Image 1 (cartoon, one colour):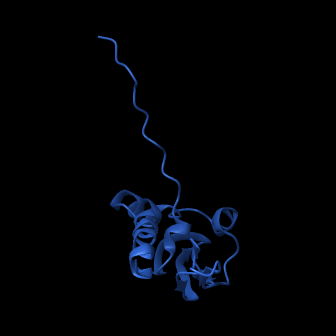
Image 2 (tube, helix red, strand yellow; image 1 turned 135 degrees about the vertical axis):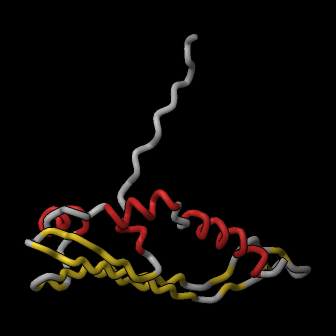
Length: 135
């Protein structure tokens, strides 16, 4: 079995976990509208720049997964165990820049750029469903 066949399911699973729904995207884009800079700091931390009518928040991270061998080990004819495969070291760069337009220290508009902006997304309330409806 190739390394590709082993890593493909994990890659698809991780991709599926980071997909943003339309509802989540709208909520993320509107979550800071009307809030003060201090209210926003309480949620996502301090901006890297805050001057005049603009504030910028930045997330930037490189995640490295170190390569190695994968199991299982198989015994050889001479009683030695051999590793059957190897996967490479990989690095992924995650970033997001949130630029807010301010008016009287309140956010009136915002723009996101990057490949990992879900971390700035608010948690959406789960819909409550009745287990049983009595009629």
